[in-house]
Length: 145
Image (cartoon, rainbow, N blue to C red; front, top):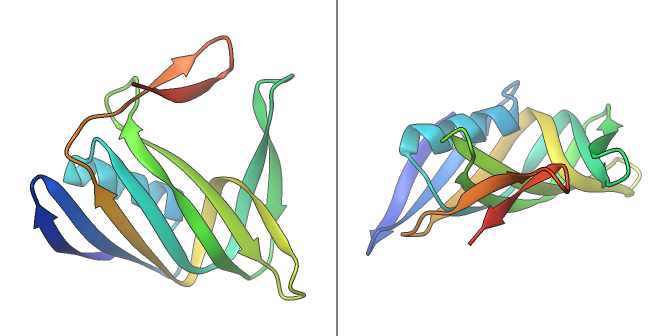
């Protein structure tokens, strides 16, 4: 991973983060957020994965139904946010739309992706703190304002 802070204005920092082949994107972006002390930010990215997993949240079972994409795919859109979780660490909430070789797409909650050959992310920090709290009634963590 390589990154560069490209702006800082009034407590708002903007980073460009470049992930390399074979890095697991969700983990790498979470580690970056923790290292930089990000407490509230938006994330956008494009690139490609050698394989990935997205999910669809099933409220009945309170779990994600995994949708594996076991082939090279284009990251047409990866976007979401970063907040602080109940454990005090960065909590990422990302969604992805992945393009397949036949032009079809797979999309959903982004669970994992092995970069191949690159992922180019822009992370825009906001000068505030957001907390994502686990909701027992829903089975997921949501931002609490």
